[in-house]
Image (tube, rainbow, N blue to C red; front, top):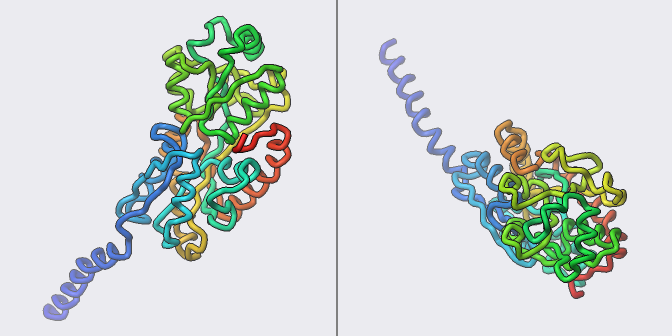
Length: 326
């Protein structure tokens, strides 16, 4: 009995020692997440918060790569070129997939054929903020409009990218207000806000969360948000609709995508891991600090959401008259 017990114990110990090593070999070394905008912004924050939860789940190391430029197109092109092995992800705003097809005659990617939806990430409203270039007495959209009419050469706004939703929200506002707001595109909202705080640009249109960390400085003032109700992260700021601009009601989302033809098993595993990450209380709370509401989804749900928004923006883009060549 003693000898038999020794043999069984030794076998169990051997399994205990060898199983983790064998299991570890099945976990890839590195998973990459591309983000098309600058570090410190909402896209980057979303990528990094989720990445923290994917380590040792999908790969030993999860690296966020900021592939900035061309309004997010560089990151999308990098994803298209990546191998469909389940080791490359992208988190992107809807604009690059749902609006760009209406504004660019030719894109370096096909929004549907080249990418596989994985999970929605977050939703958010847009804010319209002003900085030191605009007098502190300007506290409403009506007062901003009056200032623009009196200072037409300084009537401008920055956005994270030409052809993005925040760009169009401000364009629609300018048209409705009867002012010529000159657009200045940036590589992300944070660079735009940096210039806003420095007095190089009068106003910025971007995700509400991008402004929150700067409001206590007093060098950024939010005049409006774009939801159908006041934003819960900036409840004292009235909406565009409250201030008479009833048609300016918009929100956007970020989503995770993989290259097309990724194996079904890898897609299912990755989607589940991301949904679990976005449901973790600490991730939900961290995203809320940036004005983002976690919204995990299935791949099918994300595909349907993209289709709906692509169709919604087609007539709006036509009304605005913007093209990437203009």
